[in-house]
Image 1 (cartoon, rainbow, N blue to C red):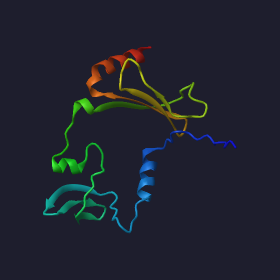
Image 2 (image 1 turned 180 degrees about the vertical axis):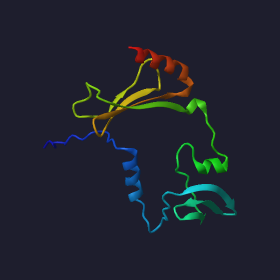
Image 3 (image 1 turned 45 degrees about the vertical axis):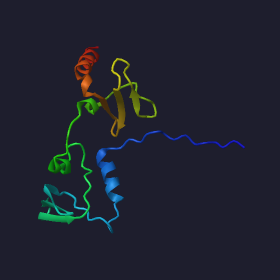
Length: 159
């Protein structure tokens, strides 16, 4: 007997704000103390304990913890305080992102489109459908190819 599979898109697109809110809603508050709108200014280690000092909506805040996870992106405050942030240009990428409206010829089902330019190995260009009839265009490439990528973008924009 043949099973009929229902088609589903490979990707889902959402605004970063909505995705971040979804992730925060999944935090188990019985094991985590979530401090939203809080900026950490200093991180120090005292023995086996981490000390964080910062500012929140109610003023100054101090946090003491035995376990610290730095999941705050490329410009991580944790890595900054630990002196661990190093950029390896051979494994680093640059990006250009723009939002457009009124673009014609997009996929009729408003699907994510991905392109891989043959002239720029390891690079890609994608178009995200966004709410309110807008699209986000994003191109990413290894920084080691930056001069060639800029020239290609200039040629594309002239056409």
